Length: 214
Image (cartoon, rainbow, N blue to C red; front, side, top):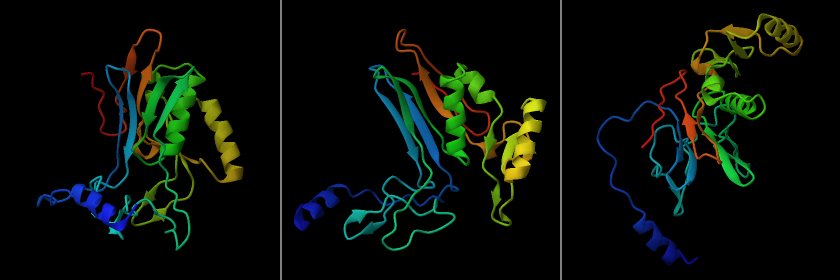
């Protein structure tokens, strides 16, 4: 690729100036989509509300992330940057059966728990989304990362005692919080039945979300 060709392509990709309206508050979004032709998309937009083209360039190449996800350690020169994003499509015999992702805190644990609920425990999408979850330890700008991870209220009492006994040794999931807490993440998913073509989804009550059929 010549430099002149790169300049030509960049000129074609130029976008209009940003609107003068105030920028929205930081946050991530996720969409899972299935169209009438059976095409599927799982997309997490992690730029903390900046545009897909965020205006950050280095020698003609776009820097697609604003750095907001490097909350613990900013990568140094020559280091590989890693962020916690997990848009996914689960296939069975080559056909998609789950299209899912999460735009929120605890997203890795959130997606793991829901996929286990759906694939291993045979729950419906509604049952899985409403089931209690565990999540990452809470973080606030004032106090930083707080000790101990979190469990939503609603787990079986015997299971909770066992987990807390183990957690006391490992210094992990020790804090029980309200049901349907935004700290345990938001699951945005569509479950597909390849045989019938039926698709099911529902909004997660932990955060603003919607399930729509066109």
